[in-house]
Length: 446
Image 1 (cartoon, rainbow, N blue to C red):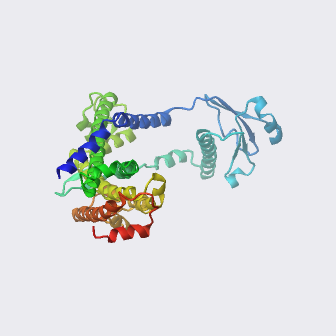
Image 2 (image 1 turned 90 degrees about the vertical axis):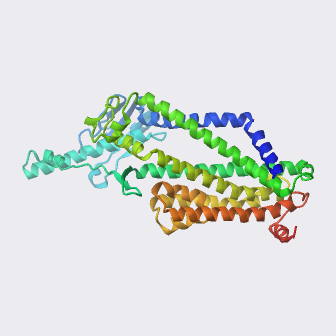
Image 3 (image 1 turned 90 degrees about the horizontal axis):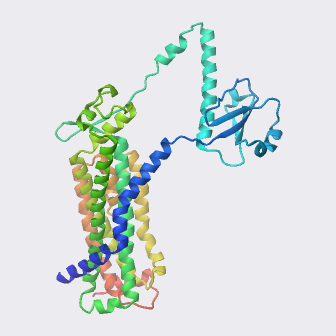
């Protein structure tokens, strides 16, 4: 056992001392925060590009699109499409908008340009034409009904509904929840596990191949057993991944805390969570609108200490369980080949369950109680990913315990199988291994 600890220590320290590990560990939370901030900034940023669009209006609509500060719509009278097309570059037209004569029947207008128009231009043109036609139709209905205030009455009937989801706790207490946040947490956690299993599992495989190709392993196994070497490498790399994850959680928590203090300085979070409307917002949060208030309350109501601790605990268990299960297979593959090129034929059976688990996760998010969700979260080869999608929606304790037990049991079985392959393959050189050859190794009584 002491020899395994020595190997674990070597594998762990040799990786955490690398500059690449330190850079990735400290910069990843900042990079993720920067990407999200950039995406939000891009979505909120106004399009300030000045454009001129030629309009050929063949319909009876009177100027259905209006010019704005940055986009000018130039209505051309008695001009043919070919004439406008040939003079586009000369006159600096960004696009040509053609509104056909029968637009009320076809409900289609066309934008012609030399390059793909932006989504904002397309949506703005479509929105303006739609609103113009709807206004004309409403005016016609009002005139026929002989009720001048009909439009105001119709507008008064529009009643937007905001849905809030509430969960009952184990003791019957009520707790605010959010389906969108649960789905986001589940997808994020499952994808991180998928990424970690591949990233660190491949590190184990490459380490085995490197030691085998350099003949270092021949020296090492003169002092330790092959099984001890395999377990030391697997556990050592697992500790590297766990260290990196814990540091990411801590750093992300610090970034979120600092960001919240900068965005909402001095805000009473309890008062914010209990506010029933924007009129009851505490000082420092008065600028929030109704939609932002609901989002803030969903986040504050969902992320309590018990909830976060449960998610983090489940993530650590299924990360370690999934990693240990698959890294044993990666180690076996690394021991069976002489170089990384030969791993492709053996990698496919390993990667298929992981990829399948990601696709099952999308279906689970739509229906976490389905049979597919149940079996996907129970079968050990898919449970590390699928269960993380289900947990934020709530999973019965017996299903969680069953999934954990089967994952541990399968890991022990796979480790025993992988150890038999490892013991033989680690000293096998110059021979291209097939599945038939590996089956023979499994039957050896060594």
